[in-house]
Image 1 (cartoon, rainbow over the protein chains, first blue to last red):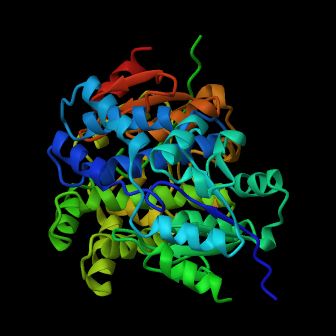
Image 2 (cartoon, rainbow over the protein chains, first blue to last red):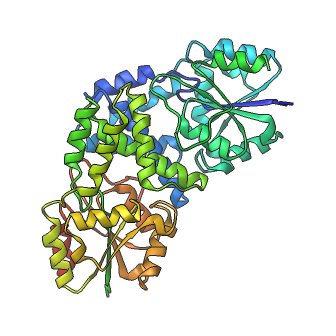
Image 3 (cartoon, each protein chain N blue to C red):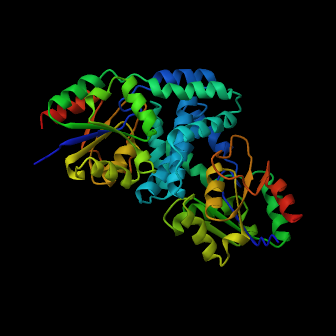
Length: 223
Length: 223
């Protein structure tokens, strides 16, 4: 009955471990929540762009919001240091559960594709540096649509590009907003409940949930 | 040449001082950035709703995101305490510069209207409790449009309801995203550079800027 063929994965925090970047950024801004505040602010302004119908890629939004955070926290982290912190997003390691889970899912015959709000070039660099490219049929970015997830057209255009249908596609993320968006677009959804993450209480419950991608992979390969 | 007739004001942080709520929330969550993180998260999810085409009012989004923050920070602030903190938004005092500035602008003949992302009923309670209702021709909320600022239709519908045009309207806020949205909708804009606030570097420069509403009022009454 459940004819899942394609699995789309969010990247930042879902596949990749952002904690080294978090530590360095919290140190640089001398605030234990600096990274969280910046990441929240970057998402805010990505969605401000969605709301007003403009598009600057996530690297540009990330840079702009880091300089805003600098002012908002009353800090004076240099632009050079900010650039150095931003560059860290290109060379993150995957969470330990990710490679074995992708191997298991690929072995089980699923088509695997990454789909991120990061810019296309950054996304490719991220997957290559993390050694995840070999598991993936394609590395996709919202650059394709010039609009950020969770807008429905982002997921639908990616699926269309891959010649699949929403019903046969599962979208997996560690962010409440991303599973809410995918569900809204008619996809099946999986939530990885990584530390510091939470589902949006006003969105539908995801189809699958687990603490790690391995837990989700086990549920999916025993369907 | 500059035929300004109508001034729209954002409410939270622009007219009203949120610092008592910030202090109480930071205490309750034992984190000096708890309020900032929550406010950012509330805005994020308001714009997630914009992106996917749904609408829950800001009270509902605020409640949902406070429970998310509780989980994300690994805290166990009770639901009763969360409700108590949320209720504080209804009885905030205006910043000290606000009443004299509104009086000056009203005296100069401008039509003054508040326009907030808060729900209509909350907005009315906020203005009444702050003693600002007497300066305002109308108290407006995005409930009218069922979509959050900075989507262009929010500003345009408010202006249309007030029988004004974007060109004769000035929108004033202490948030970068709000002045970016108003400028995008074709309004003139004013930014109040309150502590902890910053303009979005990728948006156009506002028409007017000042540290307080009194500074902006002086610029406007000497036009």
